[in-house]
Figure 1: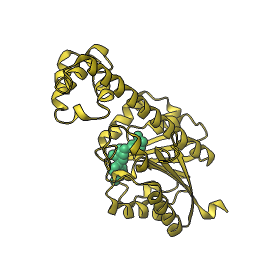
Figure 2: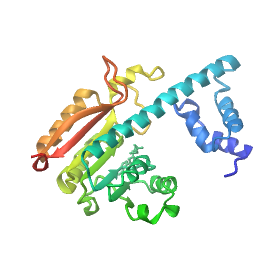
Figure 3: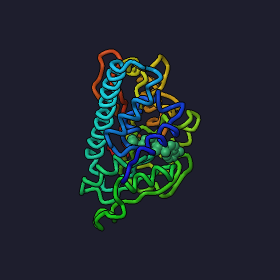
Length: 276
Ligand code: SAH
């Protein structure tokens, strides 16, 4: 993939008004510019030029961004590992990742050979395309290709394609839905599809106090409709479990803070007739 300097201009044009202040501006720039260091640093300096004409300060800012970013990347990884541990504990043969995004979890699930059917569902065709590219669907060995299905669908509508799974995962998905729509998701997943286990992760809003650049009440991502504190998540999870015949166990991902708790909250729902 060929990146020329025009791409820097294109990136800055497309990012006008938001990229400069985006916490992940560096990752976004790196990805867009295919990790070509010279262009990435040009883009980043041009992005923050107006803010910090002072070079030293600019470099400090970049270093701080990088550190913040690394913490984020690390959290991503820790979250996926936590989810995988719970998936593995359920010894499933069929797993569906709901709101699979670009397929990072799918990639890891494929490595668990005892899982014979893996599905990724997302409402966004663009995300599904990214997943297909990331997983190199077109070049995937037949034995893996047979195990994997990607399909477009919405968690707000009952869908028979979601039936028959041992585990369903919802990793950082619920907070992307308007709160009133969670009732629809609840019906679709816990009433219609009824997998043996459902694993849900979502940010812990309390932990946001530890992100230096976040103002109080702000959310981690512009597309988040809500971020819950631990009590709220627990109430939601216990309500669902009680209404649909599941038990629920709460867990977390990432390093926990003594006062604010973990960065990511996690719930594992288990169908009660199965737990018996
Ligand atoms: N699970 C992935 C992606 C999280 S981002 C990860 O952890 O990386 C949230 C994802 O949910 C996005 O890919 C978005 O397209 C998807 N999504 C949002 N609303 C949805 C809906 N109603 N049905 C299915 N997917 C949805």
